[in-house]
Structure formats: C-alpha cells, structure tokens
Image (tube, rainbow over all chains, first blue to last red; front, side, top):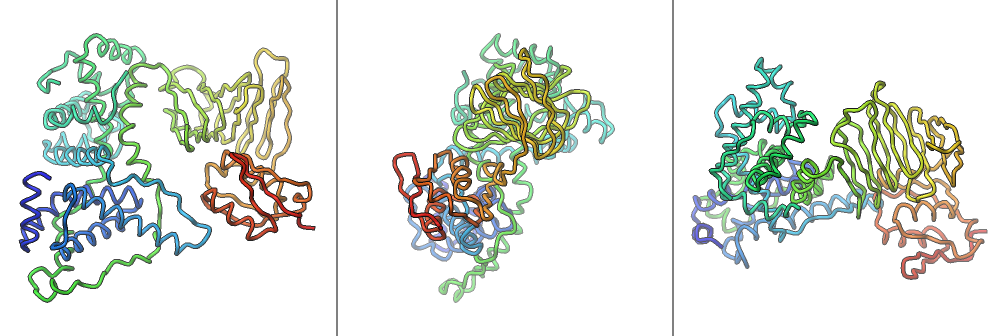
Length: 189
Length: 339
C-alpha cells in the first residue's frame, strides 16, 4: 500500500469526508469500467460500484485490506458483480445459465492496463481543442481519416498531423508507464 | 526506453499505417524502418499500443465522477450522525433482470493480448493467423466479412484484399458472413477444395484433411476442387456440399443445431437420441455414445442456452429413462430404451 493510500485509509477510518471523496475520485472511474466489462451494461455497473463505496464507508472501521485498498475495492466490486450475475441467472431460470469466465481481481496486469486507459482518457481531455476532437473521432468513434477530413472540412494531411501530435503527447505523458506496459503486453519476437 | 527519442519516419505515413490506409509499398517501408533499428521498433510498438488502447479508453467518457459522488453522498447522508451509525437499507435492486448481458468480459481478458497480436501481424507476417484454441472466436476481415471460428479452427487471411479475389485459408470449422462485393469473389481454400462466393453466409467444416462440408444458410455458394475433374457444384440455402475423397456431392441438410457452437443454443424438438448425441458431441467437442440400439427409440424435447456439460449430463436422466457413465473422455448414455 503506498503512503497516499495509507493516509486516505486512516482519514477514512477517522470519518474524514474529504478522504472518502479523494478515494472516490481516485478509484471510481476505473472500477466502473471494470464492472461494466464484467456485467456488459453500464447503468448496472455504476450502481454496483456506488453501492460498494457506500458499504466501504459504512464499514470503514472494519476495513483491513490485506495488500492494498485498491485490491480490496476491486475484489469487493468483483464479488458484487458475480453476485449480481448469479441473481440474474436464478431469475431467468434453469435453462438460461450463464457461463461467464470472469477474471479474478488478482489479475494485476489487467488492472494496470485499465488504469493506463484511464490515464489515456485524461491526457486526451487536456489536448488542444481541434487535436482532441480529431483524435476522439478517430479512436473513440472509429472514423477513418479521410472521413474525418471530409466531415470537418480539413485536408487529410491536417487530420494525420493532428493525430500524430496527439499520439506523441500521449507517449510523452505516459512515458513512465510504457516500459511496464510492454512487459505486461508480452515480448515481441 | 528513451521517451525523448524522436523518430526519423514520415509521421503522416505512420498514421496512415495505423489507420490501415497505407499501401502495400508503404507498409513495407514501415517494416523496413522498424527492423533497421531497435529504437525504431520500440517507437512503433509504443505508437501502435497507444493507437489500440486509446480506442478502449472510450469507456471512461460516460463517467461523471462529481455527479456520481453526490449520489453516493446522498445515499450515505454523510454528516447525519444517525445515518452513519445505522447502516442504510440497500437501494440496489439486485433482482432486477439485466436487459442485456454482453460478452464484454472477454474484452478485459483480451487487453493484454490485444497489443501483441496486431503488431506482430502488422510487422512480421504478410498474412494474419487467427486460431480458436479453447473457445469460438469471431474475426472481422478488412472487407467487413465476419468469420466465426469454432474451437480448433484456424484462419489465415491477409491484412487487406488488394487483388481481384479475396482469398483466405481455413482448417477446422467456421461460419462465414461474407460482405457483398460483386467485383471481388471471396474464396476459401480448405484442403483440396475452393469455396467461392460473392456475398452470403454459410458454414465450412474442413476439420479433416480429406473431406470438406459446406452448409449454405443464405445466398449461393460454388464449390470446386482445382486440378481434379469434379466440375463445380452450386449450392443454395438449405443445401450442403460435400467433398469426400475426390468426389463432390450435394444434399439437403436439416440440422437445427448446426450453428449451436456459435449461438450457444441447442434446440431439440422430439429429436431422436442418436441425433441428440451427435449434436452434443459436436457442441462439447467430446464424444457422446449410445450404449445400446434400444436407446434409439428415445426422443428428447428441450432447449439449452449456453449449457455447461455438467448441466446437460444432469438433465438427461431427469427427462429420459437413461443414466450417464463417463469413461475418460467418452460420455456413454445407458438405459433400457423408451419402447
């Protein structure tokens, strides 16, 4: 557990509302995406994660994370999602049994990659306006470069330059994470 | 790894490459550049990773942290002493049925691999290879054609189809939904047989070296064996063409559960137990056998949705006068029959 997390945990136990808020800001987005990918549905995913935070606060005195608060939260959300899927399964009856391969909360690599995606999202939000718009169209909406150029009344060359600029900024901002990420993603031949 | 390293490559070219718009010559140019220097290669790896991962970062777009924190706070009523000392009743409706259960789980597992495979393909192979080793996999080709590979199937396909034909190679079983393109026929090479279509959907089973089965669901499909004097066989929906030891034949098929491995649905409507055993063998990749001929008099009516083996084995003795005996891999159905 890093020192920032430890002081947040102590603050939480002391009933410090800002500590709780900081924890929420730090872990809520990635937990939501995690839950969404387990449940396949966003509204329910948010509900599960919010409920997990409510319980964290209510039981804050009893929280004794074995390794870190982060893995404690992921495990809580993970189990809540499984419970939810089980309930759905019962509801739909005998024949509609769900076969779901769920990654364990211990899958560190998957979580690190999830956090990296969050970092990417944050860096993209800070890009200059036009650069951000073009990059989001390309990556989030999967629009091909010539179509982006056409829709925005720009040359393809400009679109390519802006995307290149965005990728370079991402590479610079995430420089600390990239070596780790390449290890997580496996070595190339 | 040096983050300050600046590449000597044409940036627009690199973006076209990542966007899949580069010509064959340009792709080669990138490959040559990457192989010339390990820093180049690292740079390309990083850019490719960022390119793919940023698409997945989209999921964070719809999360409003301050708004949702207010919701949690309201539920907790932080500051109200009595609310904190007494846990509030849960407001989540766990019993509410999920409207949609997507298979997004696989996505998370796939993140780690997602990087390795495309880059490998982009850089080091002219052809992509996708293999469904443990469970069915769907591949979308550059022309929009979707190929659903059953377990143990393997598809080899180019990154794009610049030529006058779209050719892929298959071993094992796959369901094809071919994107329409009258100018460029889609050709599947499997064993000695070529299957040729313009835009349609059909199942190819090339699990064995010496035989190929093609079952047509929509459209028209032509089957021929080049170099063998078999001529060409044209099939329409509901027909299955078979190539077996040098001969081409066709016949109607009526397997309801032909695509069960893809849809997850096994439907039996008064189905003879022999057929049930065949379909289950196919679905679970494990042989189901009837111990006696008497059992052929039994018929099953039931529907399964993505069943596990255990569920099916538990259900059969409940609805039919049979027992299950498992001998290593083989699942033996025993009993007196249903006369």
